[in-house]
Length: 303
Image (cartoon, rainbow, N blue to C red):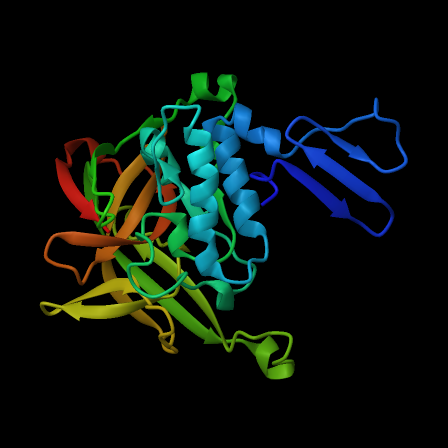
């Protein structure tokens, strides 16, 4: 509302504030003393400032999470009027690969949940989860850091179906074992009103680096699902009960970004939509696999 409104009046505890598309002024100050206009951000939006805007937007309390899609779509349509950018589910297609480098960062595990029923938004979009998200800071290093250890994208954009939300990319795939450790939350037993989590949940993957386990950022609570006699890690659906016992399952990692030694990979689980289709379940930063260059590049569909 603040970004799209032509004029806004703010009623604060101390004074009134008026803001238009050009500037802002506080009650009691002369007309020559003006401040910046928040809505003018749309005129000079860069991809970097857009990611900062998304981080601020998702950190706010929103009454109905389902309102986030129409709200952010309206803002993106206004930006697109002056740029050749195409908006899709909170991301821009001309920087889609870069935009995949988000992670879910709520304060409590109980806030890790999907935005709504299945197919509300594609799993590769931050709109598929509730609460705050952030982007990996290493993506926007200063020039000196880029010269010393440049960021290289290891995944290629193929197509995006705007109706089904199916994203097709090409990248190097690795098989991981995902382990979920669930332990009782002692703080919940002491003060259940303040500490809502009955359990502490830790996710980690291992498999490519001498068996060393690496903590991951799961998008939402995960569960094991048996498909063709194999257990796969998948998202816990909207309104579904989170598992209360530890478990292990398989998942796929697709190399997203690499540096000299480190790598950022999307973690994928099998989707129920059909064979060869995956859903995003999280993201992991770990050592670059030593054999990554010998792994063939394959096409993959993410919904």
